[in-house]
Image 1 (spheres, rainbow, N blue to C red):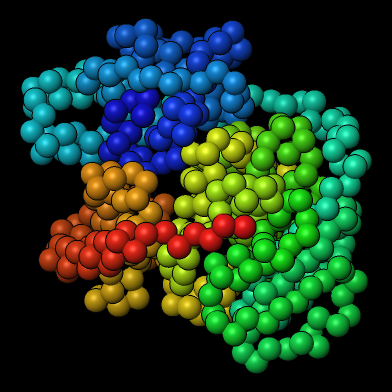
Image 2: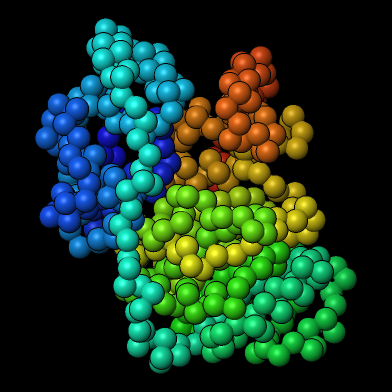
Length: 439
């Protein structure tokens, strides 16, 4: 990690790991970065100034996989507090201070740096963005060649919503694609698919298993590109086109579309521009089929749980594949309360349905421990579990987040029991190892 305090603030973030070639995603400061991202001289070291510029460049949408940082220099406590105050809320900076002191760091050094950096105001990274003005006029020879795409949709008891999904695909401007539906519904309605004007292939899957469904469809797909989609989403007619165009424009391997949850909503500000993606959402992503041949299919250790797409996204990242966050390939994600993964008993990775369930879901700890190690997994639990005791709808509500800390202390014996149970179950998964089939 560029700044060591990120292990407390973002302990399991993709960009905290090096790729298998030994590089971080952050670019070495070049002429473009120097011209567009001002140096912050409040840092004491020149290295910290460079790291700050590189961080801001990535947050601001600078896409450069050519020359990136490979070796990290340890920065002072003071410079780490400068960074933390610039990019995170005061509450999280206080959280870091407490963790550091409880970890037997020098309290005088910590408090001195904490108070000396107090005047620093939070910096809004999205105010600095690299623009790609030539995208709108870009003529893609790749698109003119009409590459064949396989759109994959697993579905479970959502025919009312799937009707609109397939209708949207009928309206696509780009038409050289097939649609593969893996239907797990009960009862299975074969006639439902009769009248769609699509190259449509439907297979009934008796087992209710999301990652099995996606893996099955990928193995049957004829396209050189796979477009993963959900059965409760709506898209515009240019959806497939924009995914393909971005691959060509950035010479990328993966186009990660963005989601909105209500008709007419704006795209969240931090997703409203091109940038290197730090996630992969299997409800709206286009990727080369060859990636599955190289790194395998989805890990079925995540079956009926969460973070299977996160694990695959990180696996692709570590293997050097270029993933671009694409604001032009957006979808309306309805997140309906019935069918799909909801019927398999999973809704949220950290919020339990009853007090005796593991928290977080064991697959989350399996993912964290496998890729980030025991310490980072524990730091992630410490950061995320206390704020998960309040309902999801209050996730960004600051007063409720403060209240969640109080509630977590009161319920600490129960929460420790839940975490211990999850840790034990994730240990079983780790012992079994990944269930990744090769294509």
